[in-house]
Image (cartoon, rainbow, N blue to C red; front, side, top):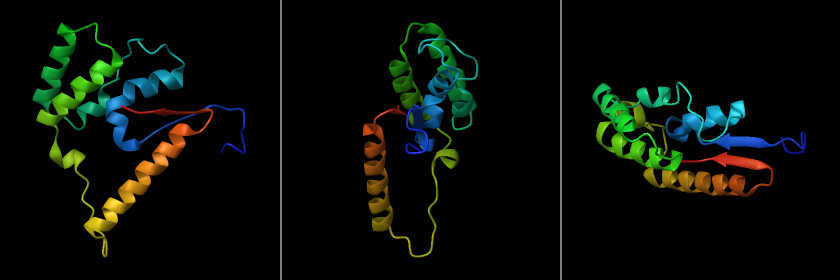
Length: 128
């Protein structure tokens, strides 16, 4: 991609982080300022958190309106620890021949690739 379009900035993120960073992704793609309030910023979070958790999360946000995005992500993580829908966040890896060691090795390679991407010039990595 970089060779085909050398002057174009590229923004990427890890799909598994999307519910945590959805609002930032929307802002970045729309060219909005980081603190711009938007509707739908927690839509993907709703898909992986219980109704009670979402109610409590929104109530918490209402009583703490001045939180930064980094603070919101920490709050989201805390609420997910308690109210996540396990069946929505746990991915079952049931592949013939895949051992726990192989999955761990692949995960380490993936994490290393993400760090290489993070260091690329003109590439922005959105991360929690």
